[in-house]
Amino acid sequence: MASHEHQGRGHHDMGGLAAGPIQRAEHDPAPWEKRVDALLRLLSAPERRIMTVDELRRGIEALGPGAYDQMSYYQRWMASIANNLLEKGVITVDELGHKMAEVEARWQLNAQR
Amino acid sequence: MTSEHDHPHPHQPDLDDQPFEYHQVMAEAVGELLIEKGVISADDLRRTVELIDSKSPAEGARLVARAWCDGDFKTRVLADVNVAAAELGIDAGGIPIRAVENTAKVHNVICCTLCSCYPRLLLGLPPDWYKARAYRSRVVREPRAVLAEFGLVLPADVEVRVHDSTADLRYLVLPRRPDGSDALSEEELQALVTRDCMIGTAVPQVARG
Image (cartoon, each protein chain N blue to C red):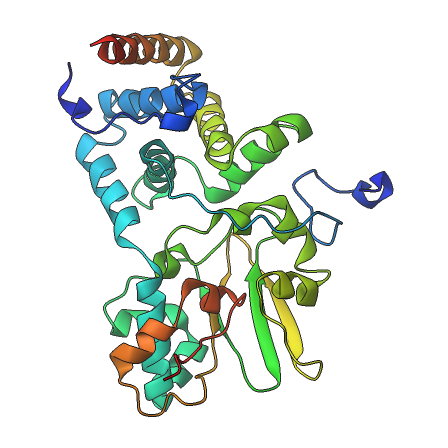
């Protein structure tokens, strides 16, 4: 696509630009994808208001052009949710790192059984 | 082994070469942290996933078929989808949804050029192509070409209107009741109203014969 078309736009702002054919293949959302969707719904629910849908989108747009195109849809969501929670101090980098290592070790163990 | 681990493992067979994809691990970890901190409960998370699973285009189809059968109800749908849906016991959520009506001379199609806004509580989760670059980029510039790729070729005298959704306002296409459907029951009509009919990339078809 011509780069001048992108002037003054964010990378996500793609309405009206040239693009290839519609890829119509669909996949049913995986359990982890539904979990990500559920986390956003819970965090944005009126009884919590920890983050908004607009904050989700800002976080996705902040990933930058490379990540935006390489990551899958719910990978982008997850990255944005985590960054929002870190920014707001709901979780810390240390907590997230430790918990991810713990989850990975647990899954590894289960996979070996 | 923890008690919340009674669900199938979240990794997919096609990802076996990288069994623990980073963001899948992150999704598990963030959920567990939020539960440990009491921000959400394990029950909240389970019920919300169940809610997501329970939503499908059948909800939207019920609304459309009722509107076809009841002109007063249709008027209320066009005035306020969320309120009209509640009449049928359907929770369409707090974000306003506007119904755009197809007629013999106007065809509507919905999109979200910036992201993936979609009437999820009436249609379920959006299809992959709705969230992908090609549809988001092109449907606002060359809707007829895009619709043709879906197999929908509209007469030149039908005006095509494209509606770009936002986080604060979503759209639902109210398809036109197809010719030859007069004898069908409301339940049979519901079966004609597919997801794509309510996105606007298809129109309801009456089975022949």
